[in-house]
Length: 74
Image 1 (cartoon, helix red, strand yellow):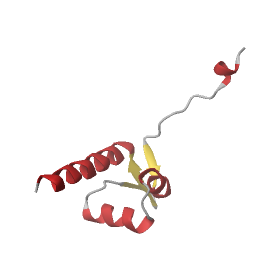
Image 2 (tube, helix red, strand yellow):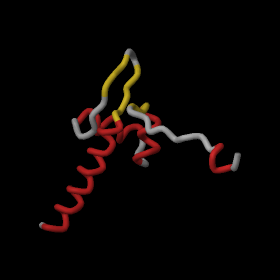
Image 3 (cartoon, rainbow, N blue to C red):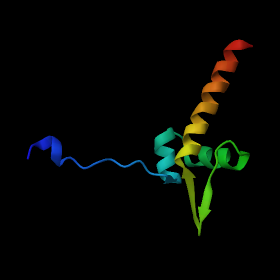
């Protein structure tokens, strides 16, 4: 067996805790919750845990890109 075959496979998560979303988006906890409150970042709750879907992270990043592109058009 060689070393390449012994590496664990990385699995993409479907749901991220807020602390993980903070790290992935490089945003503070207060900014994450503000974006959730405003509807710009989707989230779900399971019990008392707030989770951010991976698709919501992608959509949020695309939203920020569109807004940045529109700033240059004005």
